[in-house]
Image 1 (tube, rainbow, N blue to C red):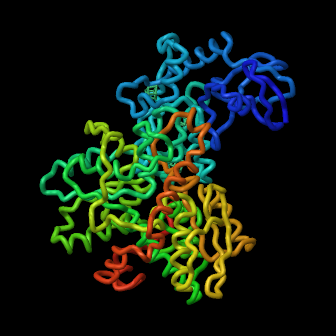
Image 2: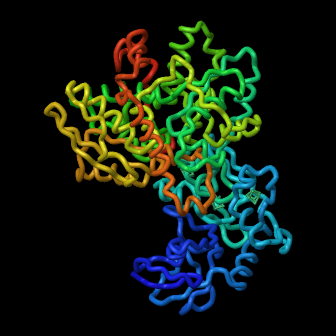
Image 3: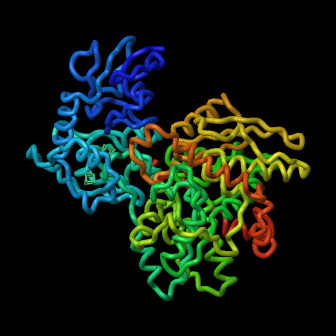
Length: 571
Ligand code: SF4
Ligand code: SF4
Ligand code: SF4
């Protein structure tokens, strides 16, 4: 351990720690812009400059290592002056449109400029006047608001995609895609991790709010919302509630107050996905089909396979994602049962994800989901409608798609799909199987592995989240180093709870709180409280198979609930 003082407060930290790490232990906040825990640490923005004994001049706290007996001062006139000038230089070439900016009141540049009393007009600068890139169905880039912190580049590189990088020099330096192509022509898979990483309003997820508002105001439309499992665990953050608060009841009540609509629970089609996927897995194991089988509920991951590893497309489960299964179910079964013309049904899925916006536009999905709305967009609609979210009563989802199993709910966290599928596979193979928890596949470790023996059969599984870890799994399979039967992959590190459409929290929270763990806990708590733990025990699932699909993987189920994939033509 190394002993030092931060603002005269003694702390001990492991050797190799940075001054920023030590400051956290001393409960001292040092401002940062380019640093983001678990994503980027390059020391380029110069906001975290501090004075430290033994150092010449100011040093960047995020990269400068601690040493024995070091004394650090973080709030001297020299530090404050340097940070203020840095901010004023950034503002001199910044499109200052705070009043209409999506990140207004939630922007690191704005917050620090106010805190340090930066004068936005002190230096006369010039805008690059780069055209807005809104070519991509998921992500919009406004480089005139970019502060070149490179957090998005680090996030995309960590995703093993590398669709964006630094381009040009000096004043013309900016972030873009190789060859200067638009984002739609790059290798972007739409995961939105760059948007989550961006400290300002330079990157946003494309908004579909106007289409939803128009449908709600159209008397000819029958509007249906359904919400993904992880949205209930994060929406409260947009209204100041603590991270990890489950707001399911208030979320349902709020959506109902947006206009005439039905509000369903997407956990039901998570349960349906499990029924179809577990059956597919058992069929593949019993008939010598392609193994390992990969989960297919994450559109960013599916796109990654189509683009980067098309040779592994046969490994993907043919199941649609829960979003698209719900779309299919509503435009067939639900419309038939309620005598609604599918053209009059407007389907809105509320999701934690930016890639789902791309997924619902895929031609294979036949437009069954009209709009995918992120958690952030839903929060904005609730605020615009003047709904006092925290004062709402708890309300239940609408029948018939209200009650789900805990297995459907844990879909929102990495390892949840695997655990839910294992519960059903184990029950199917060995009716006497009692244990419903699989702790080996829980948690936010990048790659988790386990082997289970069920009814004399050995099932080898792996779970990975984050495309960098997905790539490691693929490499280990292709080299023959590893053998698995079933692999769950989520593109976003930690799974959907950390998706590109989730509420954006300030760096002061993101650098200090394990968001993914806290949000996931809310889902596992809900699973534990649920009397139904197995997807196969959900009454509406039973009813759907009896009334409509016949059996999992039946011809009808394949028509509505399954799909196919193709290599990206640009590969
Ligand atoms: S990015 Fe921040 S500083 Fe820039 S316009 Fe938006 S809110 Fe204002
Ligand atoms: S959305 Fe994902 S893949 Fe696309 S640029 Fe951002 S981080 Fe990269
Ligand atoms: S787009 Fe955002 S994250 Fe990327 S370099 Fe610019 S400011 Fe940083």
